[in-house]
Image (cartoon, rainbow, N blue to C red; front, side, top):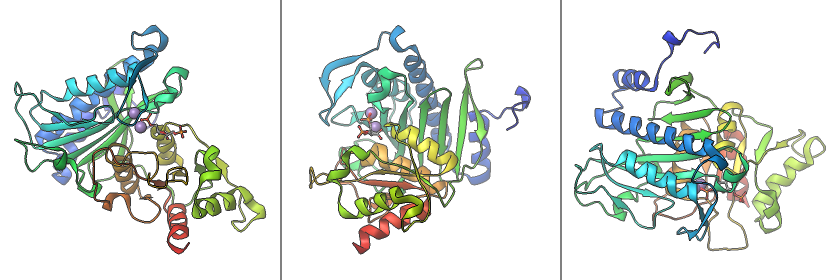
Length: 340
Ligand code: AHG
Ligand code: MN
Ligand code: MN
């Protein structure tokens, strides 16, 4: 979109959703309302994030979440904002989140619908207090037993997602969305309070010379990751015969947002410290929605061996190793895992 484009030609999120429905028949009225409610929740979270030390929700609590991580006040506030904004619409049967051990049933005071919502209310919470970009990740699944949903109802492969998206709260507030027909990015016009379509059909370049990994864990990595990263560090002098650049924001949403715009590979591998733990990131509300977006933009996402979207989840909070981004690089590191 040209910077000089008249506001009257802005395409809002609402207009975009209606047009998608006409084109692909992919967004029911229920789903449309749900996406609107989610996008509203993201605006609210973005507002509280932007208040920083001026806001009431600043700093840490003394509580831990199910993963043993200390919850920030904003983690809890963002979780509550998502629950409150999405429970009334009549389109959801239940919700689940990084910050809640069990599932959240839609209260009896509201009708129950045919969808399930999973979310990471605030991704990158170690960056909250230092004014570095953070975000919210969400995933929508169908619910076959909408009257009596259980944790089991959520345990579907990522390929069954009907909507996935994330918001980034940074210098700009962005909303990235897929309903299975490509990936579009909306920018929050803070004066209007509206999400405006600014990047249509984002495509990730197949090739990249940029990678993201927390290399302080290097001594714990398994051989395929050691090999893959050291070949990039060797640069033009090594087998890759090209120099690579490294970027690590420590908010997956922000690293992924960069990759969607200019390519790259993001990795959070399993390592030798906890052989039974398959990586740090969570499958259902971090890896799955991001993998859906990445694939819809022409990229790839694996756990080192298999496509993330094909994994059958065993539990709500299970973890998974993640390699995602530019297809040729994800294919390469996956090959290294498969061939040893
Ligand atoms: P969360 O804040 O939701 O717990 O997720 C943080 C995740 C992810 O966003 C990021 O890429 C990664 O943790 C950062 O890990 P390191 O602390 O190892 O850098
Ligand atoms: Mn997260
Ligand atoms: Mn989080």
